[in-house]
Length: 169
Image 1: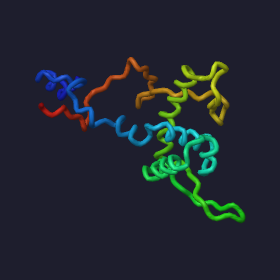
Image 2: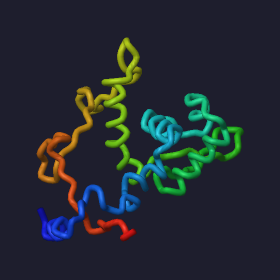
Image 3: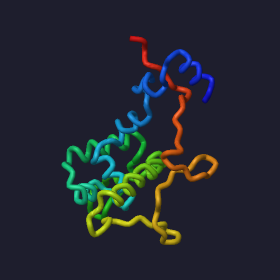
Image 4: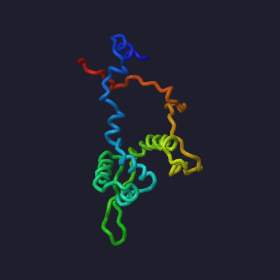
């Protein structure tokens, strides 16, 4: 336990229950990607879709909602647009994943892995994820910075640099 946590506990404060939970990276992330269509758009990008019509066809998402979600993903820097033009047609945007968007792959793969285990069709998963290099199934895992596999029960949460306690009532 660090000195800051000890001092808070000595003052009768519980860092789990008396913290300012509004200052949370998970909550901020969910403001961006916490809506069904947004995650499904990202899934389709990873499956190879890049055009508005492709997303609309596969997802069945209302056009106005799809346009809004794509615009938000571009504004957030998760997707970028590039122009393409088919012969005889006008120029249109296609959507490509950015490095910031690629950083979401482990989170979405974790959702996929959980869904394949607990929510898949009785016949099994609809899609399989494999390592292109060797063909082995892909498995989302948690590892510490030193490379150790970490299980949920081995994770410890401690106050970070932006930790704040609730204001006194």
